[in-house]
Image 1 (spheres, rainbow over the protein chains, first blue to last red):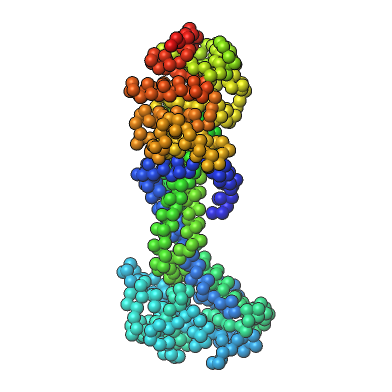
Image 2 (cartoon, each protein chain N blue to C red):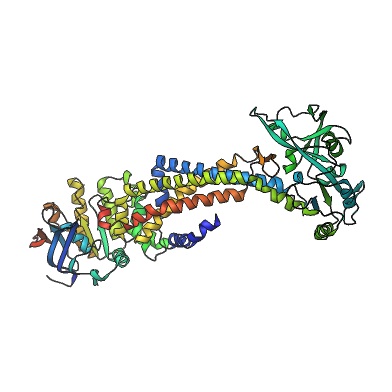
Amino acid sequence: MELLFLPLLPYLAWLLWTALRHPIPLSYNWRSLWQRKVGTLSTAGAIAVVVAIFVVVLSLAQGISSAFVSSGRADQVVVLRPNARVELNSSLERDRARILKSSPLVAWDSLGPLASAECLTVKLLELADGSGSTNVLFRGLEPAGVRMRSQVRLVEGRWFRPNLPELVLPLKMKDRFRDIALGRTFTFNGLNWTVVGLFDAGSSAFDSEVWTDVETLMHAHRRISYNAMLVRLQAPEKIPVFVKAIEDDKRLKLEGKPEAAYFAQQTEAGKPIQILGQMITVILTVGAIFAAMNTMFAAVASRTPEIGTLRALGFRRVEILASFQWEALMLCALGGVAGAAMALSFNGIRTGTTNFETFSDVGFAFTVTPALMLEGFGFSLLMGVLGGFPPAWRASRIPVTDAMKGG
Amino acid sequence: MNGEAIIRCEGIAKSYFRDSLEIPVLQGLDLEIPRGGYFALMGPSGSGKTTLLNLIAGIDRPTGGSLEVCGYRLNDLDDDELAGWRAIHVGFIFQNYNLVPVLNAFENVELPLLLQPLSRAQRRARVLEALALVNLEDRMWNFPRQLSGGQEQRVAIARAIVSDPRILVADEPTGALDAKNAEEVMALLERLNQDLGKTILLVTHDPKAAHHARVQIHLEKGVLDRTVEVNR
């Protein structure tokens, strides 16, 4: 976006200068727009829709990014098999987990070392809207794993107990999946799993995971090794030391990734939506630019005698160009403000997509931030510059005598 | 001609081109108009009177000859210089008033002053003075649609004189007015000529309007046919 504006900066600076120095009053443009209410509002409406889509698409990416970024802590490390991009593709034997826990760099709380060996799998759950099922990530944790996710808070029921087929689900899954409630039973791998609690993970990626006891989950899947381990270090500065230590230790041969970086890498999950959204936005933008151009060409055509009069009075071509360009900017800015406001109504709405790293569902909320709204508004101005320039140029080039005769 | 010439045309020619066809409108016309003169350009349609007016007002360019107005050789000025020259030296009065419909009377009159280095207060004083001269101070917040034709033309005259130009050009200024309003407008122009010393160049078909001028210039097929001094 910024790159698109960069080549236009001198032109925008010049426009500002003309508005300050040689003013065909901006009230002239504003009133002219208002005089053609229907055309103005319909064009502004089209631009508003494009801006709203633009902001909503960005807010999707922002929502996914927020979900993942808020999942990681600066002092924690995810330990994986070398070259495993995600926990699901990794494996970690029990003896290695024991060695990791005994590292002097690992932080402790009153209950023991803050390190959780974890097992992950995906299961199909039915969607609430009846459109089918989707994969959901099931995470088996040790008790420390719950304590290490400080953003996760139990809101109903209780936490799962060791060695029992008990599940704790995110409260936010209730909107997206069918029959999510305390006491509900799921049957898989020969066990009946009961929902004993609901948690809130503060809109982090954990709001898309089902949690259970790691040993029970491994037993049900006849697994002998964990997938990964989450380790909290005594201080964020210890991360490079710890990572190097586990890489160099011949008994381990493991890779450590800072938890924040690990989740940031997963924001790639939003890329397909973002790319699709951007493609749609580009197509709509071209349409909106032509709509703005068409409206402004109509304005120039209907006001050609006015243009002639202004030129006769002594206004130069550049002042006519600037005036009509300002009018196009006002028109598109109107759409920009309306579009940003429309997008705001999406803020907080939850939806989900497939994380192609884990092939499981990741839930997130549309996150419309002031920065995104400002970006949408800037986008409308870009449409104003591109759509307004040809008509403004045309207006400035009509010979005075022709203009006074009506073009 | 008596007095110093403010407009001097020497061998002025103007042709238009339709495809490759040249259509001559003015053919080597010589004319001098003294400072403070009041001239009416007359002639049948197509005789070149409006073209001559446009050339003298600097909104069109001759294809031949030399044109000097207010001490400037207009042939030598580029487009922007011509625009700047018009802003200072020429006031325009049009048949259909050509007021900007979305601006009120005050704002319409103020337009030419936006091109001059004046403060807001100075502009306001000049606009009020111009509106007072055409007796429309009480209608200054009215938009053109809220004014009668005669009032609109008076606002247009106020706009033409607000920047104190030396020349006023008027193209059929009474063409869209009834007899009473036309007479009022012509009386106003006469007053601007006599009291303020404005040089007025008027294009008209209307003999009554032309009678207000001191000299009538008759054009015929792009050449000067005759000049008539009006006896009143």
